[in-house]
Length: 425
Image (cartoon, rainbow, N blue to C red; front, side):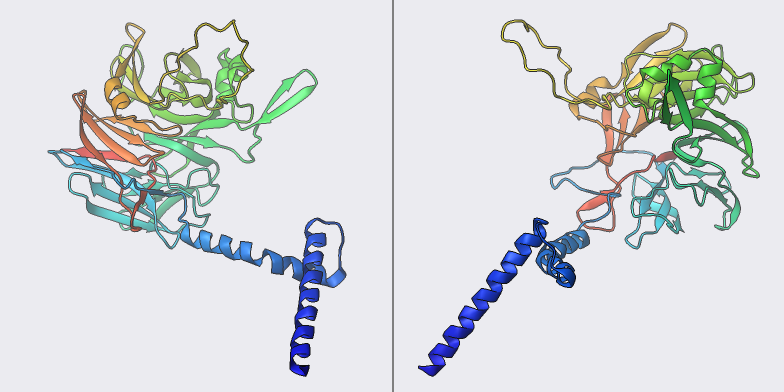
């Protein structure tokens, strides 16, 4: 009997202590009371299961530079010629690798391992491979280490960290590099409206010497627009913090009837506009608006034709409106399905048309942000569907290549970072 009473007493005391602990947890978690030095230990104890679960999930989750591959994904590879590309990707230890690869057979021709001093989602975007095997690269939107040139042996030739580089880089006829840049801090521009001021992220176009890395030209988009009578276009943006969103600067490699060598074409995503600018005279030759929204990657196809990757998405679209009235609305505006496309502009006729529109629609090729198109010839072009990680080659309105950049993690592929075509032969 005595043994039973001892057990019963122990149970009663344990239940009392558990009840007291539960009451303490309730009071602390609802911030009704504090209990001195025991407050933090109690918080830790009741939070531990959540912390443990979170830690397990973090271990299981890969960085966003990896994309889960659709289980039923089917690749297409009907390439009859070697398609050599340059791209970058993440390693599991945090480093970055830049590779030269043949998409026809997935053979890696060369690679560089580059230390990542930043976070797990830092990206090397749109690197450049020179004919002698030198590499030019940077970490997009990161102040350091800057724009770097490595020689064929992988040794640094020069670096320039005066500005932050982002998005596309392209070489002119002399090999010098035009890049999308920005100054620090983020609020590098200012709009005055009456007695109010709005600070915004102003982008720049910059030209770097191939041989030394020195800055040869630098100008902000706001300066270009204001000095050419288009400063008011800043008020057309849906994004006051990032009114322009420069994402590509494409130099003309030759002179034609509608542009001169060293003219540049500039893509401004957030006002859906292409600028034709002449740096030598600070003259805005022309600007283009048309059937494209939030575009990326402007290219010169021939003497009279421009092509661009049209993301075809409203950046700040919120699908929420007023409560409808019962009788007034007869017909809705049909926005159609979301898919991206390629827009072609004829500078002679000033007419727009679409390339491969049926292919994009049938395959639902769409990327809300980034993305690029590269014409290999007039019948063949490469598309990077960046958000999904899909790479396409389309020829005469037929898909001859569809694949992903396979990663070292089973079931996942790499997020592409503005893949560059090296050759197709």
